[in-house]
Image 1 (tube, rainbow, N blue to C red):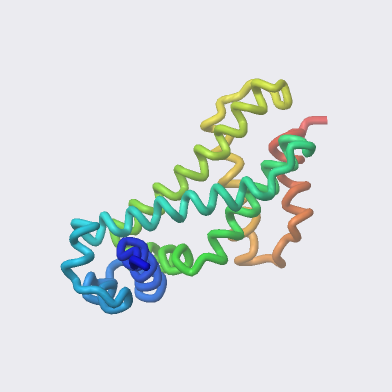
Image 2 (cartoon, rainbow, N blue to C red):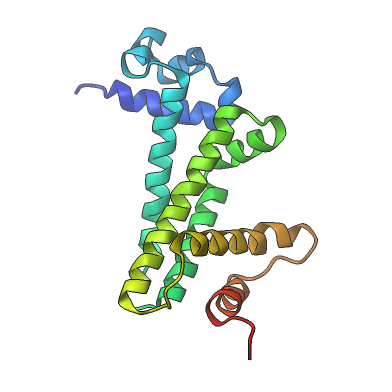
Length: 190
């Protein structure tokens, strides 16, 4: 059986980036973990950045799949957006690579990592935006700017999950859903 060297390299690089971060990962380390010669890596990927990009694209695909798995066509747009957003943020917290990248972005400000984090957030925003467009077309929600709305929803979500916990007791999943419904879907007016 032929060994899929490309797959081995991607898995080894994911492991290395997850353990050491982008900056500290070298092609030598990846080759060692993959048990291939360094030259073999270069037959598939010209640079460390190209390899990193491949991994991030796979991560984005996995994140979208995780979100799609919790969407239920019989649920309302609001319930599905809550479930998908919560799952995406859970995924980011569970995935060792994203944890390491958040840490590296915060502590070192590595340009390649900062670029990837923007790409990751943009993928999430585009995912939400697409769901908003469909909901508008179906008449489930009133017309709005899908780009701004997706941004506000994601930022509110992140604020309620991560920022709130810095100085308060963490909110339950249901509380976050209620707050999202109150502030985004109902509004505060009587």
